[in-house]
Image 1: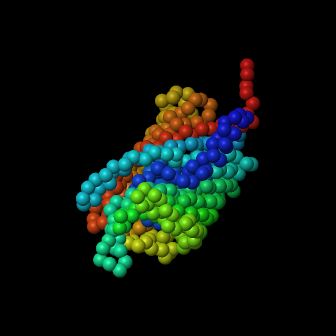
Image 2: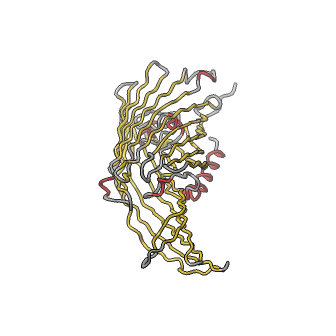
Image 3: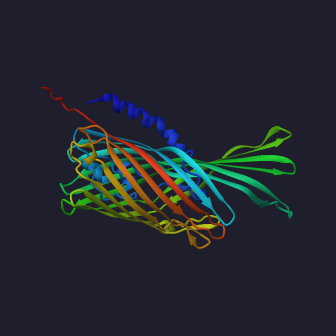
Length: 415
């Protein structure tokens, strides 16, 4: 057993929790203004290049975080870990102008290992939502008069998902799983404005936290066809907010309102259902097809200018590898592509904020005798539309995942 990589990763995992908990710099989408922010779709390693599909994908060579049942396939003596980074280029346009931004940060940390015969487990830390928006020239009426003032608003932060997965193989063909998620994070909003020659900065930090339970299933219809399903049970996230206001007059700062803590309304997470199909054909191809339904309307929540509506997500992915067991490097390279369509969970002025992604990826083997892989994925997507106050967002996403396998308790053979 090689202990050094394990402890190195463990220390990295623990130290990264507060970093990813901030989710700083992961997005600049104007739609992250609503709710907990823009929900992150990117997953771990292999599935990023396959349209983010993989509910039914059997994987005993890498981590599949989309279905806890798959952790039952973690091989004996194998320890998987995955570290990812993500870069995103956004281009926004409305009826008046265009704007572009680039963000870059970690995308995930994950590990998986076998506990006993037919029983596997895993832990992952990924951004669940991202917040990063800027509003310039927001006009607000001064109460009791016909005058108004303009302010600039900046938002930053998001939610992280620390998930514990457990998968068990009831039979050789049937696997079940359960996941326990701890959702936590902070959204920081700062508003600066001038009134009657005085500059004021209002800061509002909102913290949310809560737990969530999920279930998963995979069943092999044949040795080439697998079906799967997932359930994320509804839950409520508790929140509290701290507010402060600082006034600046002639370069001198005066604290008008001290930090005050107060509770905010719970944020309700919906019931989420998913089904998937995965098949291997022509020896070298793997095809995934997923459908997810998120019942946001049942949460009975709304925004100032929008409402939450039921969300449908369709995903399909394809992978080609000539011969994964070959000793030749070029025959073990994996080529991937996919498509993802999201009907959206927000309706603003009776217009749903839908989006889509085209993905492509490649998996490059690292060394021989193990399943280590360097996964590079690219996605082009679009969200929203140019209409009334809405903004159209086009973006390019590049993810790089180092998916490694460490072998435990294996004796070395020498001649």
